[in-house]
Amino acid sequence: MIKETMDKIETKISHSVHITEDNKKEYLSMLETLRNEVETLSRTEKDQAETITGFARVSAHEATREDTHKDLLDISIQGLKTSVEGFEASNPQLVAIVNSFCSLLSNIGI
Image 1 (cartoon, rainbow, N blue to C red):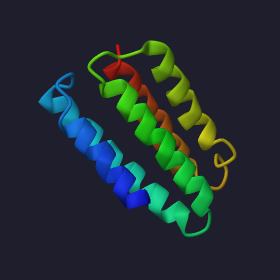
Image 2 (image 1 turned 120 degrees about the vertical axis):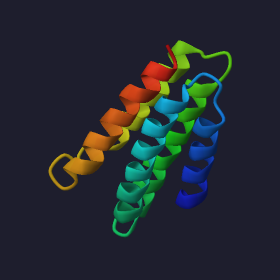
Image 3 (image 1 turned 90 degrees about the vertical axis):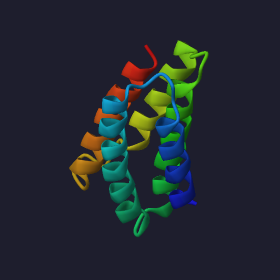
Image 4 (image 1 turned 60 degrees about the horizontal axis):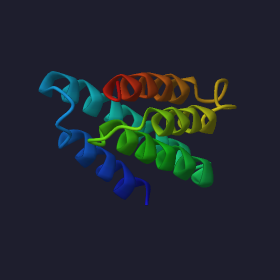
């Protein structure tokens, strides 16, 4: 399920008309890092990894919609950030990549 969801996020970003080609490369690179971190986490924390992936999907959807709804984007990004709370000590890379990903998604939705 995680792989399929991450593939959908990748497709959504790749096909977005709101993102420049240079920015798509940056977002997709960051998404690949997020994918690796979540897959690693899923070995020990499967439910949490699925929650993170789900919020990433919703956030990417809200950021790349043609008619962006800022409140929904903000809520989904906050959910994604909240989903990694508690991992600061055990997985700081995951927290850092999620925070960066949230910033990028927020910028897409401007």
